[in-house]
Length: 433
Image 1 (cartoon, helix red, strand yellow):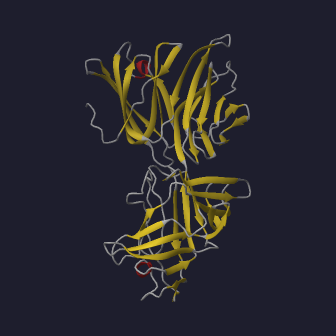
Image 2: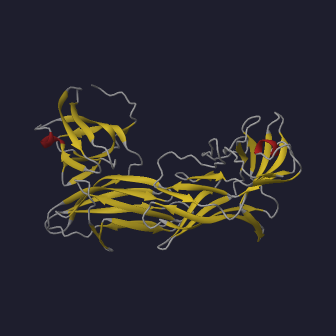
Image 3: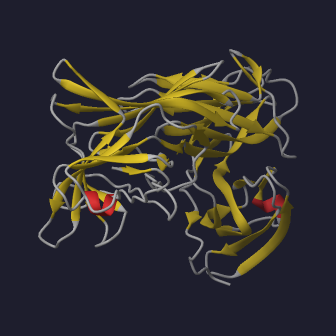
């Protein structure tokens, strides 16, 4: 049975008692099959797939107790080996990401056993061509490999019983899906799921997005300062982090490291590996400052260490700051006259209007200043001089018209200094006037 011009619509998620720790779901829209895992933040890399060389196959399992169709789900062509089964989608891809503009991809699903697929789905609603995953074994892995002219990138999508945070993928059916096995009234997922042994199969197109974004509100080098970039890959998968450095004006900033003076760096971090790399600027030349954004193919612990040296080149103070994982519009933290604040605008198109206000320990507002920050721009200042205050202790409130990033450094007894607790607040937070 053939459905030469029919497209199917499938929603995928994990439900039921075997859901375990799987926290992401997949969904689709009318007009094509779509498998997409949700993520908590915007992806840093997006690729588009051409038509796969293999088929997506749904095998009917018959209705459940509620009369809803059920499926076994096979993603690609499968072959057994060494007690496991490997199923592969492959084809070409395109992207706007530098170094990944085009190439070939493979999406590989590996499950324990050499029998039929253990991935199970259930129809979303009676009569619907959409379905959700009802079970993926925790031992299953799904991995995307991208091969371009300049690099090979391996991106884990599902491991350890859950979708990897920061990943998403989708597949949309193309005309020409066919039905086989037990006969169904019409060749559609809604009919196949209700009939045990019915099969619908066909090639697909789609795409994937991945990456975890980390923001460093401030970095400084030269003029007595060095900054150390740190990534810790605590996961069992390789992670690649690409870090861009920006100046106060929003242009790319050249930063000296052991590998050279660069405005973008790529770190390939093996499972359990780490990066801890200090800038190599001359301490005697004028201070340079800016901010940075890193996009990693998997979750890491990311931080920046500021270290200050005296005129003899001896380190006299240092403080570490964890990277931020998302911009916001509101910040509040302890502050006093010598507190340093830094802020950056991650938007590539919008300017931010930022209001910095300080309060005394009794809650009285002592002063405020409005700063306009262009796209990708950055600023930093000590609060006393910024607001013309000779002496105060209290807290600082920072609000912005669009999401930004910001950090505060305690400098009460400089050159001894430290990071203050993160001041990031949800944009819905109600603050003092």
